[in-house]
Image 1 (spheres, rainbow, N blue to C red):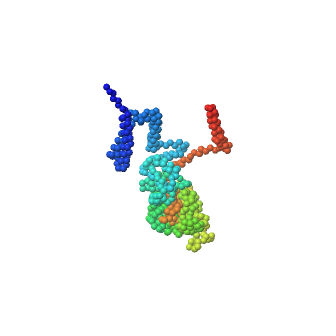
Image 2: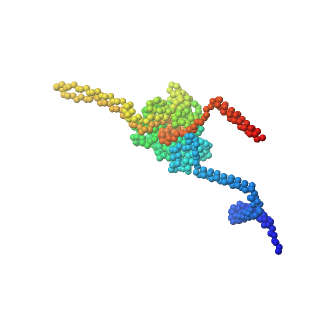
Image 3: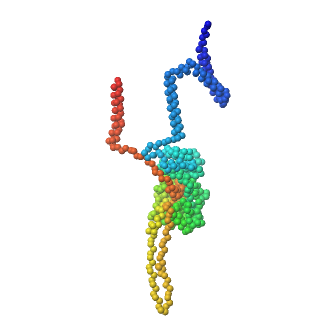
Length: 569
């Protein structure tokens, strides 16, 4: 009986040739799919056939891949690769969880990188989305870190964006951006200018939180513009205030005209009353209404030109302000560099006040301005705002050409063009009664002599001094808020076409904002300062520390290494 031997090499050789068929099928499938733009049915069939043949070849006994997998080095490397891939997958999952559910722990002593409790409560409870627009060319790292902190607290309801005004001029024009660094808040249809950031002023939690609270507040401050005496119109046109009114609306103010001849008092909801360049005098009743408004804690912005006489001298005098009818002339020549004549003073010197705190280094100009004079008044706090340069003067006769300083009639600069005034809240009734002079008691009436027998009794008229004098009327008590006033010797700087230039608009808007007292409606958030951990050393201690770090410790390390090397030889 013959024994038939089966050659095991034949199937191995057949699978060897089949192995070379698999990459050809895979390449054909990829090529057909790329060219045709579809992967079914031919390209997919070729790819499946190729991978199936490759898998069957790998599973054949005695194939090279099985010998490769059976080696100890392959198993060790496979275990290391699996461990590495597991670590990468775990790290990826941790990163995904940290991104989806962020958790930050602030280990600083005074919680330097943690928002205040009031801020967290405000941002977490936002009822409608709030967005912060920063119009600047570059992102400041500290400002962005603060905004990221707010976004982590507010989630999808708080967002921010950096916009280059030059790259997107239409959007910048929509927000009324006039310079780099402006920060605006937006929520629905409401917008609010927050501040301008630069090297001196940065975005802080206090400013941002209070800005958001004011933006979301239901209270909108009303600004009334006095009308009826030739004041500046609120509509667009030459000499109008339409740009100023539009900017006030962007700041969440409501602007309305006010005619005191039609009503006896200033409305109770008036946050600020603006008197912009009247050409005719006010009635006594209107001046009294303004005085009563100030006495109950109101605020007044007075902008008067040299050619006007609004009959406000008495009211302004009570606050220590006197108007000068001279015309301010700027002979420094700085205005001529930007096409401004001598009758348009260029201001670059500002007082220390919230209205002008960020103006240093900037310019504003006032066509046809008049200077002011002030004197101290008890209870009135006075702060200069706009100050001319030393080469300016007040011209008493501007019609005479050429303009030249006359020491006999003109007033030498520097001069004051604007002043901010505030008066302490009204005194209590007891203090007012204490300050009120007591009435002088009337002397007893002189008795008339008895009539004679043949004389009829005469009627005796009372003595003129027998009636006690009436006590002076007391001023109405205030509402607890301090009255405020800003007086400017010009109104043209806020008109259309000039309002948008330089810092002119900022002077007007900041004045209204300060007068409205909205900065008082703020949350109490204390700024967090980093703890000073500096070590103060003497010169000997510093020298010893240098020797330890540079000489002794390296020498000890080198000696220990040499000793260990010598012992192992």
